[in-house]
Length: 587
Image (cartoon, rainbow, N blue to C red; front, side, top):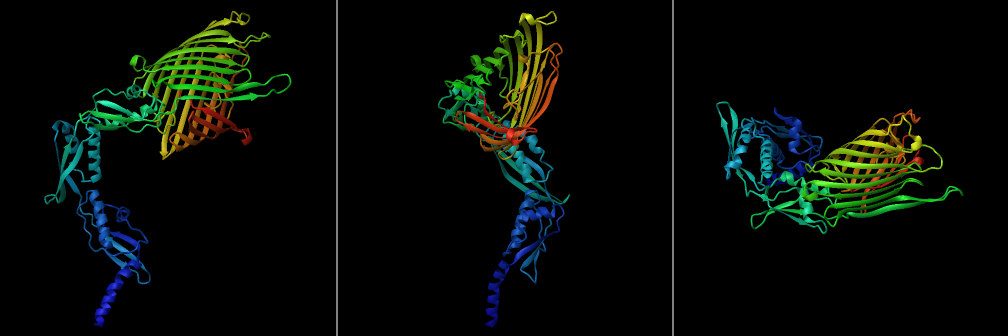
């Protein structure tokens, strides 16, 4: 009786003793194909894991499962045991793992309810023959096949593994497997109609034409996943999600596009008053005014007005109009008027018209013509400023845009290449025209912009932009030159602080997204300008390389994307920093 009581008490004590023990070391022996670290990761235990009854069976099950995923279905575990330390509560677990030989795929048999649809995939699956039966590889083959089927009108296709037959061949002492696959293609689907939901102002045809869907075209998942990017480029909507697809009761394929309109008609501006510096002069008004109508009556048409008062004597005035898809063809008609009054030097007026061909959803090309006149300001003193001139310009433009969202891109590229040729005629003032003064001047402009966007972590994006501008000709006037400096080019410097016939600038930004179109960022700007010397006008060569850096915030608001940044020019102290404000131009 006493012996029975001792045995009973010992039996009760063993589980408690086990639960008080923890694993100190997991030792792997006998393996030859997979490393110790791989097998330890499969085991899923580490130092400090509490010991429990049946732990060896659990470890063997986990390791065997992972070996099977890699094509090893015949492992052996013999001699696995545990060593209990006599002076502590720690245990050493010793696993003996013989992976066994791999199972090779000998035959792949594929059947389907549609032999024509299956035919292209038979040679592909034949490539599996002779490979180790790795489940990940098989899944990749099946997923690739399903992707191709999705993009050729079979979104409901399903591959199933009917059975896998394992056997051992004593002639070469290898393990083999025959795989039997079956393909059910499901209903072949076309996109017969598009159903737009959520839009309160934009016409349905504006959305459909941007998708470029022909009624009855085969379903393509790859193409459907591109649709949000195309619609986001319109800048009429909140970020668009991937459309849904279903087959209605008449077996018609219906693509459902859910959108939410954003505010597209904006009025914004800022007005300031600069008081007089002394009794001699008066104060003046400065500021910026933007009126943007980007989706007139829900038709996709756009118009814009901009006024900017730079200083006491300088201001800009601009009108723009866009007529999209002219006569229902992929042609955009652009027209614009621009006038710049440059201090007490000149007034320049430019009238522009252009036709853009939308070759694909990512690529477009344009031709345009421009008429420009420059009128020097009448002065009491006879000092030369600029010539009275007229110019007629023709040009071409190539644009590639793969950005996922033009307002706040996280991926893609933007490339814009521009060339124009101007025939300029000097009309006066007569007192400054000499026999040596050319009255007919040919000018050429080359412009290029390349922007790259890359998301390297969630919500973190690197944005890199490089811009180059060059003007070529026998001589240049102030009104011909490019401007550099300010919000859009080189932050940390005043707006249009530098001028040159050759300029380039690089913007590098690290962006941290707080919302889909709101982000904070750090930036580094580099800029270069060159104005060639002109002996005739006694103008020396002017050249400079400038650096600006700082931080900023782009915030999505009801009036558009508002940008504000604090920037320092290289060598300046914090108190010399400039604050730049900007409303993103969405025309």
